[in-house]
Length: 420
Length: 160
Image (tube, rainbow over all chains, first blue to last red; front, side, top):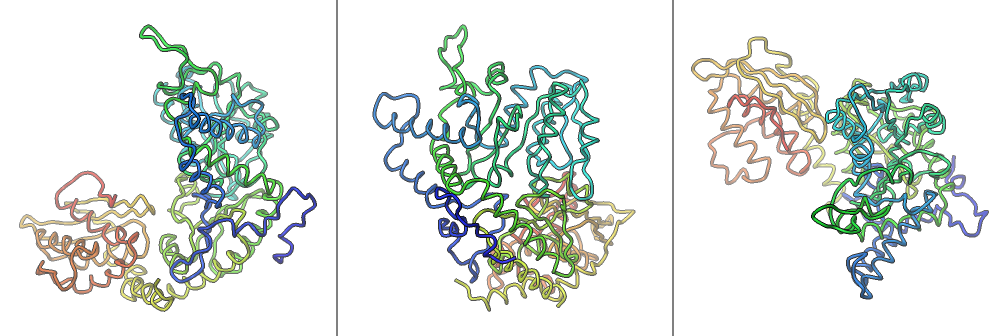
């Protein structure tokens, strides 16, 4: 596979070629420990293009004020930028309405919001929440908490050795006691893409609502809320080239309408009296207090940036690069791949000989290569494989074959040191 | 910016032969059935988990020490070196090693201004972590567990 194959030709004049995008990211032009940087940890947090950094900075310099409050020019500007970003984010995920796009602090808060506001009021002893064995801790612990609070039970659908959810087993677990099915779109530790259309259809045929943890999917593939038909979808700005501390909860309006507020405070109210308060309309009902205005505006800029390339192109480019990564890792003697699902995105976890991932991470960093090492906030996955952690290389649209080649060289260096 | 050659030297300092030897063939590895004092060391960052066992006599002498668990080369080598060091020591002397080593690896004390009166000896092989701030915790994990065990703290020691 050559780099030429990966840079796709421009059939559509509106679509910008991905191959040139690396220069858009200031952090990727530096040297680390004497080597040009090889950043392979976008699944933890992605780098930001200059346009996102500048948009946030310009907002701080010229347009900052509180939103939805003032009658003066700056407040109008801030509100317009903040709400304009919501519209573009909604269009990016094809939500049916802007009322369905709620700003949160990130995927974690989005899932906690659903657990506490949608599930907690109705859950009873004997009810179940169904998740899978490959979930990130943020799609496990919020459900454990609500189960403790209500006496409901958390049940887990199994995975196989390749890191794929056992679909038949999951479907068999869907019965009338299950009040929520919460699954990842893409596994952060294994890269597995879950067969969502099938899973959602099976759940809906039994009237079971579905929440998708989309943190690892949105930066890598087209995501369409109306097509998926999920009930809730959570994702984070900082994994899709935006700032930290911002994320989205998408929810179907019919659900959100019925849910009580998650937090109380300013901005989520219409009228406050000591006798009682009338809540604001959607989506503001779930946005108490002054929000992360600059974060939301930065996420809007990140969405514009991704839209320039088109998510189909991003997905094709990254699939080919992931195939190259997987193929090249297998040329290194002593590499064991963890997560070999048939349908994958962006992520490859691995072990090298009996070198602990933490040692591997230090040796790679010494050569300017950033990979994640450890349990990746998915300890049950590590337990399944009987390991304490892995090294994980994860890709984004700014990575290329040279990054993969640097990683492979770096692994050779680690072998040298440990067999010295 | 450090040159590549220096980087390489720093790595070789970190993964010295003595460290790799103890990581590959840890001394006193396993459970101590008649331990009087135990403690766990957990490093949540990387999932290192060590259980330290000590047999401490009535006269506060550490007559035996063992450990089990899993961790990176640095944390396993450090635990192995710990057992080599503290067997035969009075607990108060073992704690002096703990303080001296932790101060030295954290950069609070240099070899020149070290007035602890402790000769770190082969524990100095751990000094390579000073150039790798995120790895200092690995090198001190077992020692924090030793400190907890001697003070009979029931909670797991953590480097956090």
